[in-house]
Image 1 (tube, rainbow, N blue to C red):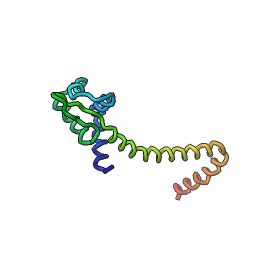
Image 2 (cartoon, rainbow, N blue to C red):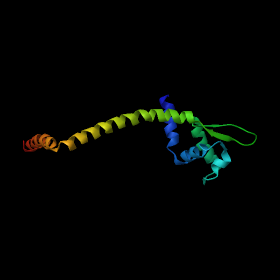
Image 3 (tube, rainbow, N blue to C red):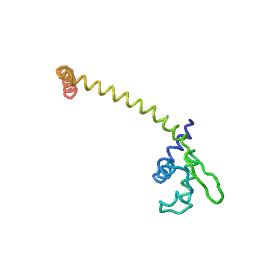
Image 4 (tube, rainbow, N blue to C red):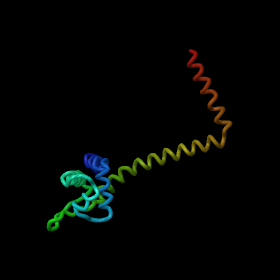
Length: 129
């Protein structure tokens, strides 16, 4: 996924109105007027939000007679999720290592006390010099 497309996706998702629109579209295709219903804003304002979502590839709009049905495009969300998954794995690994370390410390408190005493002495020496 290109970095600018990823930026467009996250920028589009940053707005709560656009997230609400996507949540509605997750239930199925609907018209622009139906999407605008719950929001206290003009149709041009809703249209601007839809253009941002469309530019990011998160929705598609078509023309059916006099309506403009909108549909969510899950592929763009999948690309963002794939990008986030790398960081999710990284943080899970780091937290797992931290958990293992904390368990080791809790299992042997005498060793923990012995390891911390020299460090405390070194810190005190550094302050007095």
